[in-house]
Length: 196
Figure 1 (cartoon, helix red, strand yellow):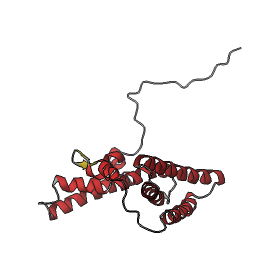
Figure 2 (cartoon, rainbow, N blue to C red):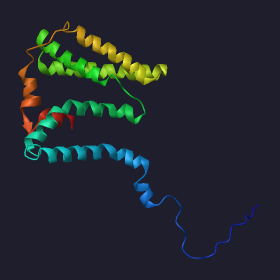
Figure 3 (tube, rainbow, N blue to C red):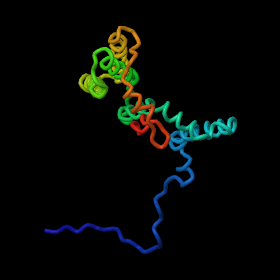
Figure 4 (cartoon, helix red, strand yellow):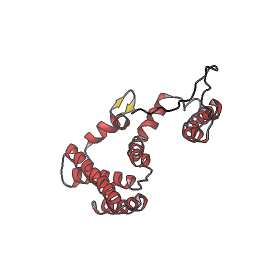
């Protein structure tokens, strides 16, 4: 048994019209595009401002290598925030986690005589465990990550103060500074390249 279905009759009345939507200029200058462009625009404006005010010193390569070297930790922290931010969440414990790992590396190296490489590996493991605990609590109990990461960040901050008994940890291995700050690649300290 077959059923005939009336099909619309197509006439050849010329080229089909493209789907109507926003014009190309309105898509380019949309609010979303403008918002996404604000940070690069601000970056260019800051460079232009300081380049105009201090042309003799600002545009020197040593200035840019210093800027890159000083912002290496910030680069790594910003990249670590990309995962929760792409999910629409905010992790407030990233800075405290970084501080805890830094303190732990120095504490293990100086106070307990660990080598610098095992200290770094232990610090990375502790940082990873802290991140996993944050994620597990947020997912398991379906709570706001803002609150949980604020709380766990406070705990990490407390542990970071408790480990060295609120004292500075002097005398960390010079190998760490050699392989992060002293040695350069293309004139930029290696810690920047680790972040990249």
